[in-house]
Image (tube, rainbow over all chains, first blue to last red; front, side):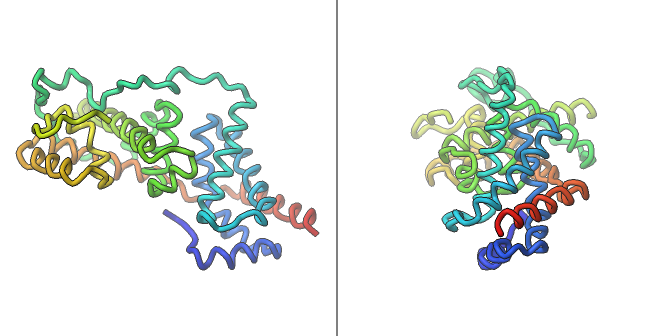
Length: 201
Length: 87
């Protein structure tokens, strides 16, 4: 995870407050790509995500004096992104896709894959080697099809490599809930890869 | 997550619900031991966990690390405007 160390943080914040453009651009380059990806888990179009990012940076600058260092600067910034993006998604009155309310009895693996006593019905085959670019496409589509919260959690945990406690902080989730969402998301991405790699076998 | 039946061995069907907790290291010591015991005897679940790890690894490749020049310019302009507001 690309990040700025704690000791650098206070120096960076002081530099920002004094209007140091280079310090600002350093921060922008470190965090903007990830902020944009997070925004895209709330709003679906890149143009709106760009606006969310821009509004978030303004929120960051205007809120600098309120930053108390209780979380890392990065977590604090991402919380602002989540809030701006959520508000924006509501304002657009985006109809919530039915998949946002995932059934509670979701299974990680198609139940048909197991026999009555709970053993695998057929062998779990190793995957063929896959080109990274191909895998990216499959995973991108699988993540896009996830319910919103699952998409947000897998984005931060697995795409951006955040630890679970910070993901909980940014998305206002309990540890347990976060882990359930992550597991469901990963299970579906695995199934999508399995289907793809099965087809090309 | 599903409730685990105490004492009994984990079934494959139960195993697949626990992989994230296993990888995150959040299973209780006892459940972790049951998970490991099952893995050591089950090639299918071993393969499944391997696929799960591979999924996590591949998902980690989706990152983008560049800011477009247009976006950078827009943010810099915003920063200058903010500076003027502040002073």
